Length: 315
Image 1 (cartoon, helix red, strand yellow):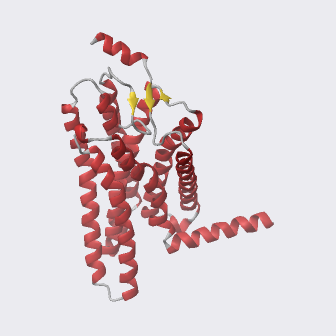
Image 2 (cartoon, helix red, strand yellow):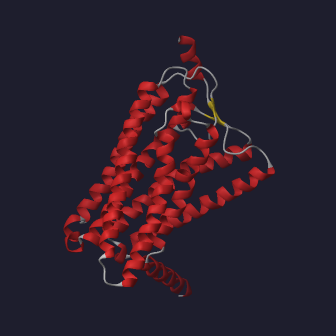
Image 3 (tube, rainbow, N blue to C red):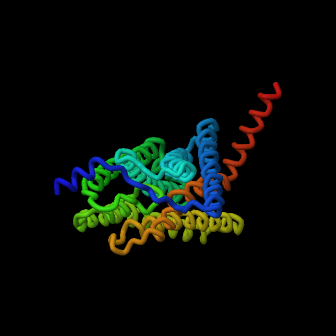
């Protein structure tokens, strides 16, 4: 065991990455780089827009600004390293850097799960109980929700990061993934991790299943309320909004649940990497589009900001 521990403390990990070194892989990597730039740009734009435009100073957009910030941090935690490794040919990652990736990833993924549930509650109150909205979703409640999502996500991440890095890695230190992720790390461990996997399963229930079912229940109630609306146009708009919201939620929670709530013996590298693309690269790109850019208030605020910047430059 001592030899195993010494080996663990003196060695870096190797990230095998998403692609092999080929021309086709370069094309896919270019696509991911473009998606990364789009993600950073649109989420940064959303944060600036929400901060500058007074009409967007509402609980919903306050929560959305935190979602955008989480998405920026999450994709920046993974994609630049993946691109740098591919271009440089170096696939090593230090023990500390790997631990930081795990910590930030779990903190942001867990926090985002809670934040998405808070946003669905906001929509539920706004549509199903509009007269009580100023009481049930005031500034204090929205700050409490956003702060709670960050705090609980970070505490949960500290526990899981500490436990994951505590296990000895006596054999291969090659991680068949494009970033350090808990399920993939457990496969490399040379001790029985069954008890810890049960802890991961419990966390999955708290951070994945419970928020997902709360979101689902919220949108069911919203749809039932929408059916009672007299305006056909209002019904159509609400159905469209709910449909796109649920598509993004399923894209995020589905692969996330499938990855973190299976025993490690059922994990395969190709499957884990494919699923991780959804909740680490794709959904951060879709979130601002689905939750805000399709919104009339956001579009008008964006036009006003662009017009204001244009006039400022002209003068």
